[in-house]
Image (cartoon, rainbow, N blue to C red; front, side):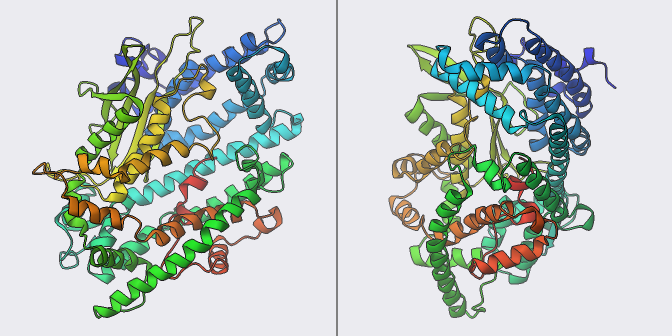
Length: 615
């Protein structure tokens, strides 16, 4: 064990720029001793609240509970971000080892004698305490947090509940690591003949993927950011099928990491968890603390989307089939063919070639668009700090400025991790190393947030610019919407700051932001050729705008079916889960939904990380 005195995770970071973590000094071996030491300190702080002999008040209980755990939260902020963004094998071992102890620590906090009783006393008296609306919200959230974690259970039920939560922590961690392993370690070899007709950036990306995985020739990794462009441009149907089949079977490529087994155990434990709370399904338990309130409300919304989306997707498939037949190919559109023929039809129908469009959507240009929109909407400016190093050389660090009361003020620190690489989770997400808060001392000092956006774009090779598809641009703006939600936080208390809102509200800021990439004024200003700097021709921009709703039936079916499958799985009664065959259930449910031929779930069960790699 490393000495805690020499552990950079436990050092004083206040002298560092913006109290950022000492990334350059942190090694995987530092995390376990740092977490353990921080847990001890956190529990002592919790016990001090619970044992206070004075009657419970907002200030001596709720406010203090929100404030404690500063070091614990700082360490975990680094730990959980790195296990998502740079989860090297040594860190994966520690992540799995610490999943159980972290769940145990959470249980110890929740069950500290006297703590919940004090929170409940303030909750009961809240209407008479002359609290601000923010303070009352904080009291209500803490009370609900504890109740939803079993605070009203008797000792025996609480012990059973804590054991379920601990086992879920282990299983969801394994699920996530299995998906990462398949995406990081599995590749599909393709030949130079099979790459004929692919654009230069795809060919160079497959060559670089081979170098990165210490192989010869060309390979396609199983990151979505590489697979989808390959499927769109590769003229060889056999190569497309090989890549597609490997991609859609992530999480079940090897028997020793078959996520179907883990997913079923997770479903069973969640059903037990919900039952202890008195709900007839986990879906009911989850929606009760969200805006939707009931699974029925969720299902009603999904059905309203599903029926017209399915009809549109079937029409789109017929269009692709007609095109394929017209060029002498099979009229049967397989899932591995859809994106290829879709791009061909789009180019023909709207006279727009993706490869001619992409040079106007380089990552650098789109970052300028992103920051310009943030300034126009929110008055934020971004100042790059190349002197500040993060956990990987590709991660950019920015100061985020805003003029407040006539004074230039640093509002947040923003980290941007845009490129796909080994040991990084797939997809795109926003997170925080530190949340905004004014409850760190009695003076109301404002602590600015450290916000991060992760994407998985394929990096341009050999100094070439990184070129984005229009969908990539939407993703970039979407995640930045979450980022702005965190950066613009103006809360007093940590529990209410940033994106700590109801789960079915949290997507609103990101949905609003992503629409700005469709705005003609934004594109006319920032869509500029990566080599010449010339703005996108008005005629080409008009074609791009006309084509933006093309294949929306396909896109809507692809993701909506995942939400429907989520609801179906999490409303199953315990007796059905006891004998459930997940593969058979998926097949039966898709047939019942009349899933359009040629489309598969965007996230099949074995790699559905949003569903099975967290709570």
